[in-house]
Image 1 (cartoon, rainbow over the protein chains, first blue to last red):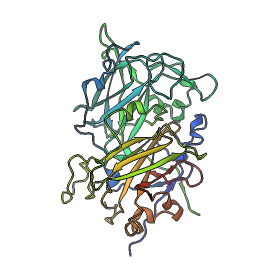
Image 2 (cartoon, rainbow over the protein chains, first blue to last red):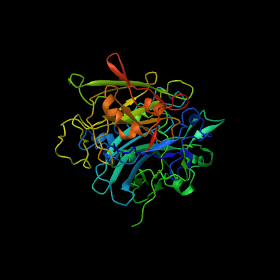
Image 3 (cartoon, one colour):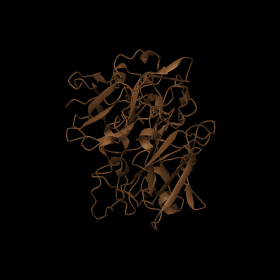
Length: 242
Length: 189
């Protein structure tokens, strides 16, 4: 008879990594959606040492150029967005699927749930994807998303942002996050941005304006690097059964 | 060697379908005509018992032989299958319901070499989730394997119950409860 494996429990709010806690009451939607039971800490078996590899799955050239997915060009400030996807050891992650989505220049999403009275743009859907190259680099062309109001609290506005999704090298490294733009005046008022407790970690989500990436007479350039790894589930203290 | 600081997580928000669902990755891991095809469905529920209609569920699994389509699984005595990459995602826009067509994975080893029962790794994203939450789905017709699964054995009976799907008509039903009574057991991975 094999001895039973004991699995540690950890209270989410005691996790010390860079990620925000599940429950962040200032962001009202977390109140009914954040799981409250302690998490069961799983050591990585083959199930967790593996994860999806997009490989040579379908991609088209316009997937990475959100300004060329329709008959005409979308309105707004054209931008080039470039960065590298790295492991926490600094190694470039090649062949990573990078998926993005965003509001249009007016701050409106092309989505049935977004009913804010700002114009839709018939030339902008707001979704894109590409694979990183041998240097771990990705590149998108899109337009600067607008800020938009939301119902979280009176006069709540989201800072301009672009959603990013990455697989990482294995299931635990999966990351969905948001990239912001430098100097946004809405940062101090945004409970989602401020759900990340550490100031330095928050700054990891702010892209940098890059004049070298800025294309003369055409588009502004912004740089945003992404570092993936295990989610640092190191508890400050463990929950005990007794 | 300097460890780089990880990029932190943020919520996928309510519009995730634009980037993640309206693309090439779908909820059918095998053709419905595949004799091995099974359907897995369930509802994503919040702490008030209401369906979460702006979420997304992802699954990751081994193939029928118990092999993951990933370089870290180099057990060549188990064959990979062309066209089966083991990953899928489903929106919950239809009344909180998610839906997959896939096949039952084979058994894969635990960290100490014991075999795990067939299972799917499950990730959930939604507005109000500042990071992914992760769980596992086990199969109701694998009683013997479930009874010796190292993860299930380490859980309380009530926790274990939340991870085993139930047979319903022509599908396996696996509801995911984010909060409150009957909360699904979630893992730190």
